[in-house]
Amino acid sequence: MMSLFAKFDDVRMALEGFKTLGRDPSNIRFEQILSPTEAVADGHSVLLFGTNNYLGLTFDPACIEASVAALRSLGTGTTGSRVANGTYADHAALERQIAAFYGKSNAMVFTTGYQANLGLISTLAGRDDYLLIDADSHASIYDACKLGTAEVIRFRHNDAEDLARRLRRLDGRPGNRIVVTEGIYSMLGDTAPLREIAAVKRELGAFLIVDEAHSLGVLGERGRGLCEAADVEADVDFVVGTFSKSLGAIGGFAVSDLPGFDVLRVACRPYMFTASLPPAVIASVMAALSRLDADRSLSARVRSNGRRLYDGLVKAGFEVGPEANPIVAIKMPDPATAGLFWNRLVDEGIYLNLAVPPTTPMSLSLLRSSVSAAHTEAQIDHAISVITAIGREFGIPGGNKTRVSEPA
Amino acid sequence: MTNKVEDIEREILDLLAKQLPEGTQVSAEMRIARDLGLDSVGIMDFVMDIEDRFDISIPLDLIAELETVADLCTAARDLLKGAR
Image 1 (cartoon, chains in turn orange, purple):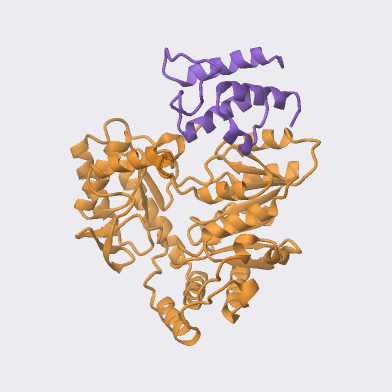
Image 2 (cartoon, chains in turn brown, blue; image 1 turned 180 degrees about the horizontal axis):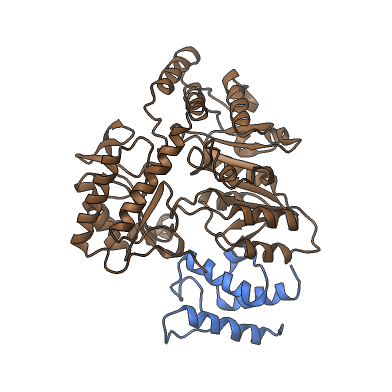
């Protein structure tokens, strides 16, 4: 009989290949986390440039104190779902807070960001409806499509015209059209053309979901994300996001002004059949959200830090993503070079993410970094100089100062 | 535009030949993933080219079921006929 795991031979071989280059990139061990920007990994002191800790709030004293207080007064966990075991006062309070932050009338909190996408998208789109998703969508969006019953159509990444073509092909068919896009895309740090997508949505009649996982607290005057920055909040029917990045904990949410939204609580299986967030998490998220709401300099700082790293790497000649955002991806010539380069970076005290096909767009091999508001300019400049020095060992950058172009 | 399956097949094989290294032999019987060496993203991109060429949208669940180039041709023909 064949091994149950034989079907994963390709992925196993690929991982074994990376392990021969040094560390296992899928399983790096952090022995100590010293601050939002420093840790000890694999025996090396490293600067953290790959944690999506955009606002650097993981050690914020107010978040920690609120979390500890909730832990002591309410216990370690809720031990069940809200539908079965009930809602704690702070679940509802967090929902009111996140709804108010977005200026929307309804909010639902999920146990992870992944589940927020999985639940919202798979439940909203029914059998006769159509989901139109960006081709470079996050796995949680693709998995939501698999879980749901709607027909799923992919449009070319960040291409509003292609979306319009695909919507027009559906002319004459009944059913709702639901368009799904992301604020900042997690691999290259590029943003969706939301104004154009919103215009298509208005013209051709569709609902619009925007996943702000990587843009909450990063984009927009108030840190609400790309919808705010692009001034299309009124056109967006649902904003989805996560508490695990800028807000430094875990959990997901969806907000909306659509009447009747609350019925999702008894229709959405990834909400109903999982335990709700523990009190300590809810408490730290509420404190982090208050901090973001009160202190606009946080968002401004993560943006300027992102620009500093991006500009520094461009100046050094590296090929990077198309936009200066807090996700900065450096293009590598091939997966093996990317793996070796990544290991050298850890040796020299810089931790970032290795991203290789098929998880990357256009089959790119990337060293993906994410910048935090907590980074000092000196830390960013140090990272640039280490990356540049290791680049010289590898003969990278070899050619012109260019950016990874968007697919046509 | 024609709806004849052999014409669709010829066009799809032409598109495929352009996507693969020069000189790669392609035929309708070939399995898209195993024989053509395309990864999952590569297959998705190739399917998008076909969608553009024929002005159709191939639903995601249907893409997952396609095994051979011939399956893809049949799917394109059915969509052109408005069967789905």
